[in-house]
Each structure stands twice: as structure tokens, then as C-alpha cells.
Length: 263
Ligand code: DGL
Image 1 (tube, protein in one colour):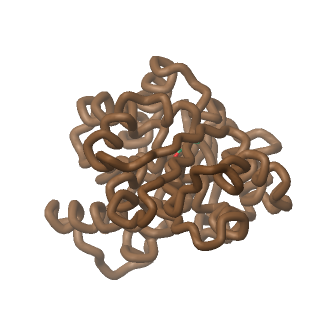
Image 2 (tube, rainbow, N blue to C red):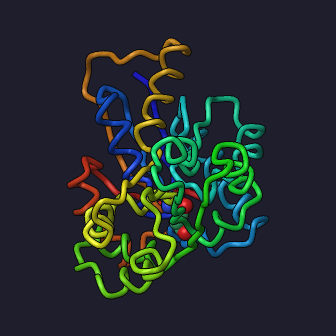
């Protein structure tokens, strides 16, 4: 049984955790979110690298982690090289699903909905140049929808008017994507709301591909599932009143406790 750390700035990584745990239920899972530095999409690049590498390295040592999933596009498109050189275990990242979107689009127009950080990254622009040549890729960076996804998870109603405003030019403009890359792990948490506004548009994310990669890596490192009772716990970097309210929603996702990460 492996100890798997799934990491994000907030609740978005749960969309990836759900996919992994569904295909590999018999491992121990630790879901860690860096709410003290949320939202990552607004952080400077040096601050983001420092926050991620420091925190993930600490968690890996404290919890005897065997494999890390950086369930955050904003962090993965920047900090994977630094994380991989700091850690001696497999590190799986999540990057926008441009490649599958390029094969799925029929009208040649793809929307990339991500954080301001991710849409600005050279890594993202390289992905587009490499995997979607000749396609029109429209970029939209939004922190508002990241916050909306957090609120939905905490049990609040989604502000559909806000969603409509953010997506406006893709709903009525001349160039309308027929394929939308959910390039932030928070956005699959809003997929039904986005789909309601964009019926007929295909939504693509990287969750299933990440689960497949994790499964392959565990097998190649001989970390097979075994009998026993697997554990699943959540950790945050600031256990304030706001975070404490997430205890029950996290339990509903199978994460039995919420604890603050030790210094
Ligand atoms: N969930 C994250 C991502 O996939 C980051 C959201 C944020 O903190 O800005 O990009």
C-alpha cells in the first residue's frame, strides 16, 4: 500500500484526487492544500516555487510519502523541475489538456480556462505550439471562478451571473470554442454549471490521465494495492475558522480529518 500525497492551493485538487482514488482505492491518501498562500494563480513565480517546494518536501518527510501528485496546473506549469530535483520519489504534475483538446475539436477553436498564472506561463504557450498547431486557442485566466469553486465546495450556491460574465465572449462572440480545456483543477468542480452555459461544448480536463499515470508509476515501482484499511486525511497550512468549515465537506469526499501542517 502506497502513501500518496495530493497537493493543491485549495479544493481544486479534489477533482484529481477523486479520479485517482476511484481507480486506486486501496492506498493511503493525504490531501494537502496551501490555503495560507491561496490563490496560487495570483502569486509571483519565485513565491510560488518557494511555497510549493518547501511545503511538499516537508509533507513528504513527515508522512513517509511514496508518490506526490501536484494537482494544480498553476504550480505544475512552473515548479515541477524544482520539485523533482528536491525530491527522490515520483512527482506527477497536472498540465492543461491541450493535446486531447486538439484532437477533439471540430471547428478548430479551443478555449483554455485557467488561472492568470497558468495562461501567462511560457510552459502553457509551448504546450499550445507543440500540440495544437493550426488551432485557434483562446486563453482566459480567471481567479473569480477559482473562488466560486471553493465556495461551491463549502456548500454555497454558484453565482451563475458571474460565470456568465466571465465566459461571455465564448457564449456569444464570433469565435466560439467547441472544446474547452478546464486548465485549473478547480474548474471540474464547476463542470455542470459551465456545461449549462455552454451546451454542446466538450469539456476536457486532465484528471483521468493523471490517475492513469499514477497507476503506471505505482506498478513500475512495485507499489501494489494490498489488503488492509486505507487511510485518507486532509492537511491545510492555516486552520482558521474558514478552513474549519471545510472539515465536513472534506469528510464527504472521504478525507476523515483536517489538520494544520506542522512547522
Ligand atoms: N487549482 C489550481 C490550478 O489547477 C490553482 C488555483 C489557484 O490557487 O489559483 O491551477
